[in-house]
Length: 105
Image 1 (cartoon, helix red, strand yellow):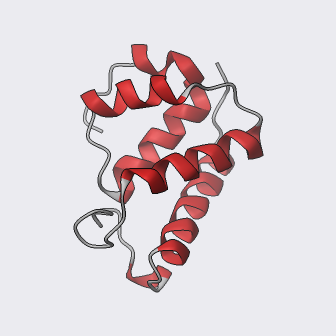
Image 2: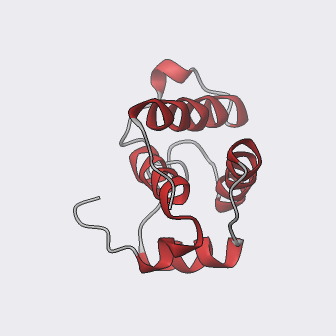
């Protein structure tokens, strides 16, 4: 398990917002935590997978996409705040994310 610092949380959030602003061709100032990537940005789950691959590479994380897929079946990952939460958990728990109980996320 990795320790997630406030600095890492900010880096992950910034990376996510930059990614969706660029990929969906929107001004980053228009992105809010409640922004739904599918309904409002015409994004899709493949974008999340690409972002996961970027984060895995940047932070040298060992992680199977199958594990993330199982997690995403049980937990909503549609808004930017949900995606930020997912990536905080990915960083912190890696493949053990599947055993994490998310309360009030």
